[in-house]
Length: 70
Image 1 (spheres, rainbow, N blue to C red):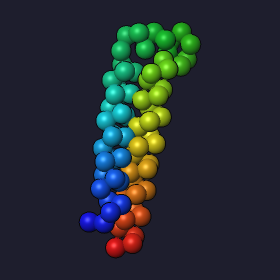
Image 2: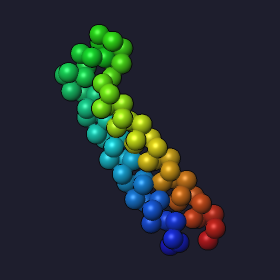
Image 3: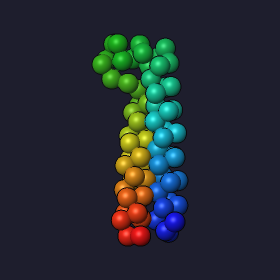
C-alpha cells in the first residue's frame, strides 16, 4: 500500500458518505416540495451532492495514481 492509497481510501469513504447524505436529504418532504415547486433541490442537498462527487472522484484518482506507480 503506497502513501497515496490511504488518503484515496479516506476521500472515497467521505465522498460515499456525503452521497448517502445527499440521497437521504433529497427524500425529505421539504426537499421534495422544493424540487416540485422550483425544479431544484435545496442548497444543503446540492452541497452534499457536489462534495460527495468530488470526494469519490478525488479518492478514485488517488487510488488509481497509487496503483499505477506501484
